[in-house]
Image 1 (cartoon, rainbow, N blue to C red):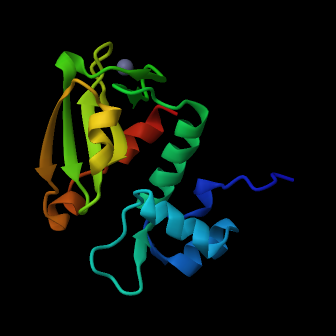
Image 2 (image 1 turned 90 degrees about the vertical axis):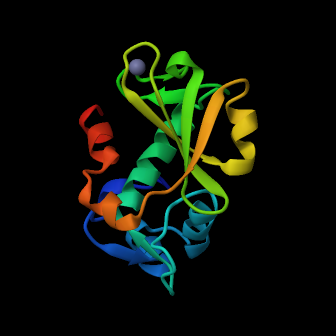
Length: 159
Ligand SMILES: [Zn+2]
């Protein structure tokens, strides 16, 4: 009845998924999950077989759904508060490297001051954020990330 729509809420936040499990849970082909990983879905470092944390997967799918509805033009990130693509305040963007190819961009909405996030291929940052001051940084240690509340929680409140 829902066609091929993916329901991110089928994913439990607090468990890791293998590619197979994620595909089965969501009713998609394993290759779809693999293509999400290629497109920037974060996986657990060095895990073999590859594991995806539930909250990462769900956040990724929710972002994907949003961005399918509203593609952000170059020079903008999606502001969950304004519900619009917004330009970064003072033209400043921070990019945290997730791995060798993908970065997590964050910036402050120039209109409402909310933190905005956007995932991007590192080699595409110049195209996505033209003429902006992008600071590229290494990811912080995983341990620290886990103890800090996930930014994705904030996003969900606004939906
Ligand atoms: Zn805003």
